[in-house]
Amino acid sequence: MFGDVMLIRVPFLGPLTFFWFIKGLPTEDDMGNSEVGHNALGAGRIFAQGAKLVDQALASGKIYEGEGFKYISECFQNATLHLIGLLSDGGVHSRLDQLQLLLKGVSERGAKRIRVHVLTDGRDVLDGSSVGFVETLENDLAKLREKGVDAKIASGGGRMYVTMDRYENDWDVVKRGWDAQVLGEAPYKFTNALEAVKKLRENANDQYLPPFVIVDENDKAVGPIVDGDAVVTFNFRADRMVMLAKALEYPDFDKFDRVRFPKIRYAGMLQYDGELKLPSKYLVSPPEIDRTSGEYLVKNGIRTFACSETVKFGHVTFFWNGNRSGYFNSELEEYVEIPSDVGITFNVKPNMKALEIGEKARDAILSRKFDQVRVNIPNGDMVGHTGDIQATVVACKAADEAVKMILDAIEQVGGIYVVTADHGNAEDMVKRNKSGQPLKHKNGELQILTSHTCLPVPIAIGGPGLAPGVRFRKDVPTGGLANVAATVMNLHGFVAPSDYETTLIEVADN
Figure 1 (cartoon, rainbow, N blue to C red):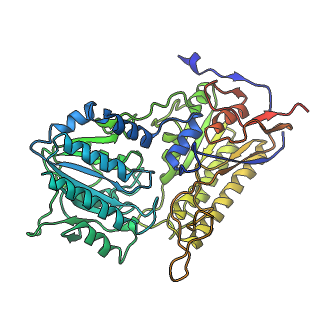
Figure 2: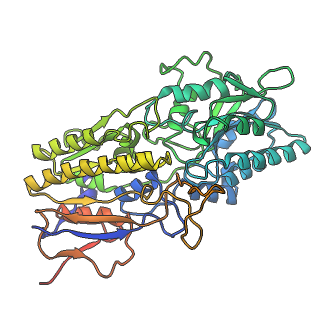
Figure 3: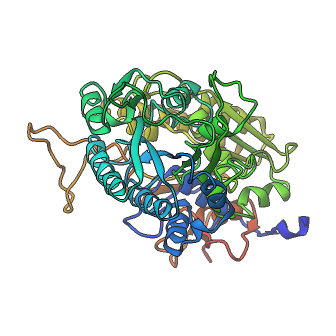
């Protein structure tokens, strides 16, 4: 009912700027990521997310009791179970220990032939760690073979070059994976995955390893996906699995020539897109995020504009809105996606689309058509992941210029700004020991950090529309990203729902 999302107006709100640091996840050991960060920013509450949900389902055994597992297990007796995902312990998209538990569980429940299609990381974990992960997995598969399970690695490639594209930025990435995983075809063939990773790393880092397939003594691929097989994508994070899920599930598909479309039983670790119901079968139910701030505000008449380039567009829309696709009210909302550069790494053009995002936001603000303008400027994150420090400096300058453009527009219309981040990355690009000292290679060069950080992120609130006396609350010393939703609601003149994390601001008595 509409009444369920009505908000109560509050009386405040002229010029002041204040600045604070907030955290994104419950503990200092939790590395933030864009999905969790935007969920928290938009929903105003912390929900059990993919990794925790999978942990709970594996620990309780419920993962093997649902319809998704029953669906794929019907193939175990006479066909192959294929597991596709990121081989990593980074905890952002997947975790090795979850894969290990899944392998154990399916083998104990009748899977007789298993093929793993690995995607190497080097982004959320150290570059070069792929070798160790493959060694560990090979040892696990060898133990399964000792128990009579035909278990092998079948194909592989680097996550940024094979399979794990997102937001339909570059379908060629998915096609490379499809060719290796489904067709058993790739430019490189090896008899074992460890040899493949070591050899291919001579000319590429873990993120960008070219696709390879494992072949037998007759030069035949050991594990292409064929009719009758079962497939599980074991990543728990949604954004970089959706495109593959479409290719695996949609009969009508025109993004690339699949050559053949095997009749398989496919399930995701979770359902990656609730609005699209994709995939239709899954092993673990995703978090149910309802009553997001975006829904509340739109249904209370707040006109909203959201914009980013392709690589983060889904974050200011889908993830912000509680893993929900589309508009709440198309008459009150406008979402603008600026196409990201394709076919190159982000350090090649570190300015990315910051200028275009800034211009779109500026124009939306100056049009006075919207009450809220929401953008994500992704340069620091995307270029930071490349490990190219000089390019990241350029990226941050471009982001600064875009932010200035937006702030100047806010000044012109007498508005309010909230500037923050969903997680850290570019602020610290060297690996450090426990005392905080930079780590160096044997040749004296700094070890470069390409992953997100666990550092708190800044938040700045200000603008000519902010009333004198508004300040950060002294009784919320450890605020987090989930507190931002209630804060933004206050700035719009509403009291947030009682179950939201509390607002960060208050009005001083004098």
